[in-house]
Length: 63
Length: 504
Image (cartoon, rainbow over all chains, first blue to last red; front, side):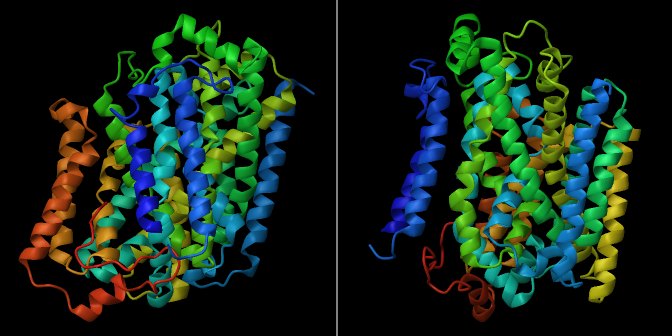
């Protein structure tokens, strides 16, 4: 279960940053922390992946 | 003191510290091959984190990265997208590789693949591909060092001398201490390059535009095409979605397969060290944000650099920053160059000896180590000669290498996950995949939907690997099990079943 979730997360990540998944987020405004929206979208996935990996690594085994 | 002298003094201080760390690092490592190539499997989290990050981010970070954002806009975001996707599988396969390394004494990626799929031809082939890919990569790092040095000292330190001094330092510490030097110098260099990148990435937009938000508002007004995916090509036309998306996927698959990076699996002290390195890697990856900010700051800069890769040095020199800051920038750029160049130099020599020579000549440990040290000097000299003396442009070879490195993914994953894979299957897959990749690299207009040639090669590679393996006799169960069952089912390591996906 844990493994299936983390694999699903990375598949979602790959789809969200490539065509066509990224299309709805492909715009400059609103700026997020000064960054164009689409750049913040990419940065957000990097941060989210860090959080997911951290949780996966630190939470105890078992479903 | 003239301005260029202050800059040079700052850079000299940086080089002296790096050299001292590199020489000091090797004192506690054994004189064996495992000591020289894998630091006696003793890297802790700090060293692994910075080795991984600093090796991945090369001179490209300070030159090519801003150049992409400056000239190609949002196209550059693909670089931000693939890194974490690419390194995530290491969380699972890194510990497996490390355990096999401890059991069978592997120190290179090819030893792992050839251990499962015995073939001396495969061993030599993998060694040859690695060295061919590393030489142009190393040349770029050397040129980068020379170019930056020459620019910030107004030509007082010429191109050839800057490259020679920076790589002289690398040569000395790699010769003396092997991968242990790479580990500890990369900690220092990694901290340095991250600090410099974030400082410049915030400082330059703030000075020129009054902030990051105002900078992007100005760009959105004047050059909106730069902020919309898939961005532009190098010649300024619109890039294709197929090209952009498949570049992300191809780079993510190939990411771990670069032999100098994969072989760091064998340097880790424990499985948990590798896993934690992966967990922390996104923090290093975010270092691309300031790199992009620097490039975007150049878009509306009043003057243009000679080439887009020169945008950062150009702005630094044109904005009249204090000499100390210019020196620190130069040291940061050298850090990025040297922390990748050292791993390439060391990796090329180690791989040539372990995979290219030792399967044929029974070198003992002492001779193997000596042969590696000789090859470090030879490879360094060859790269210097090609890059600095001949000024050969082998960027094409490096670009082709990205697709070829993708072809290593099916053999590596098959070795660790698929019992039914066979040596003929792997050989057929590699040959077909590599030929397909090279063909489409040179016949780019024939690629469907502008898809990256590495992915096209993978389709052929995986098909052949599966078909030829299933058509022939399977490997002895005990042999295959030793690799596929290398994992005790501990945390995060689900037991693979036969027929598990290949090259995923």
